[in-house]
Length: 271
Length: 303
Image (cartoon, rainbow over all chains, first blue to last red; front, side, top):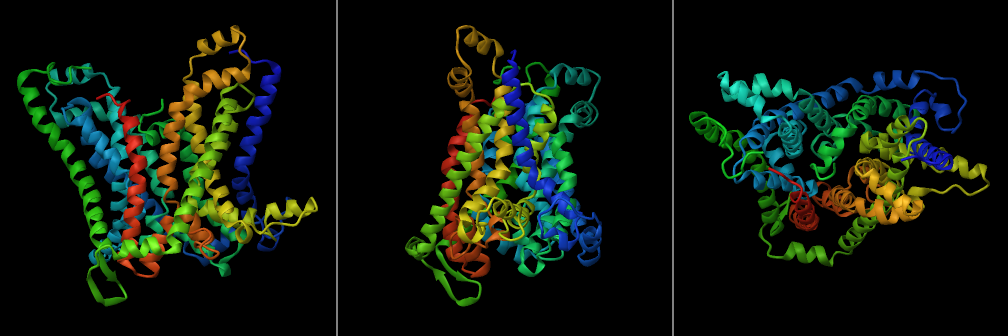
């Protein structure tokens, strides 16, 4: 549709105005992370930039171990979810039965269970099993938490693969495992990758289970940042530096997976 | 798509036979772990909610009947937390859906640098909740050192101590900031699928931009808006981290929502029975929403 110059100007003003306002807190955080602790408490644009805050975060807190926990837990949870979801999504997309529809919707409904509703039993089970404050505990929770989304996304990707390609493979004698491994996976690698990416983002930013089930040993970055909430830990520059490092990788991932995000988060209800 | 009644009709006999057997085997592991993940904690929560069970007082155990529920509904904190949960929900929904719809329409128009602006606008969604909350609380909303306070002083106004004077509003602002990008992203996708010819025809018939918005764009978006409302509702009913790191439910119980109340009962007061009764209430609330969400998604699902 052709827009009049006035419409274009208004769109430009409102679009960029909204974008800058929404991005401002993030930009301000990055800016503050390069200030000294003294400059950080006076909201000004002019200061002598320094890397002190970053240096101190590394020196004082065991930043790397929290970051490592985040990586291990997010990747672990995502890989585990994919291992369960790939065969399930494959079977439901290519060999649907009468129960497939119901199964898919039921899986989705498990996602609706509010985590706080099951906090008590999960906490007690974890305590009994010695899983509190362990990475493997969170890996399990995150895999289960994302499994419905991962199955759904893979299912929609697999649905788009033409059946004839698999037929041809079968003519050449490919068995089910070979079919998945040599035909389907390469064909849908972009789909699997973006599904994994979304799962990574969700795991990385998860802050209910990570705050309630970890203390020091397995705490990921979400919990590390939460430790800055105590009044004596109120150092704006260090908070900003730690936060900037915590969100940077996932922000970049997010920028690349906007499309898949819509699909994954709405279970295909919005296209 | 092959006929659903006989999905393997196109395959040769023996292959069809083997995949028919393998199919359920491949789905089974996911179903089993999800079933366990759902049923076991659900049953335990229900069970505990009818028990006297306090972790620091092992002497009182046993069947409690509806005592935990009775205690819950006579506790003023519970009603305040329910009220806070609903205020938070409705306010954030109004802000994110309202602004999200407007911005989706704006970002659907061509303007210079639109792609970069869109990336900036959706960025808050990828920020972890603990970071969003602490950045807003300290860098922006702090009455002395924050940006808002500095701007207010510059304009000759009294800086507002957001978390002391309007704590719930402060939480609403933070959570809206996190979820507005989500609403924008989903609604933008929906706006983009709007048939251009339909709008062009309306324009030819003399419909102004406002008429086009209200009679064409908005009805087209109603489904997507419904989905955004329901998905956000599921997450907003249990906002936790933002409250945990900023106010801890206070001052008093001003920002205690249902999720925080249950957390405090369980892990601060060790009242397993009481917390479980609260948990059951949270599950029932979420299920009411989930029912409608699953129904609307089911309508679009092709197997």
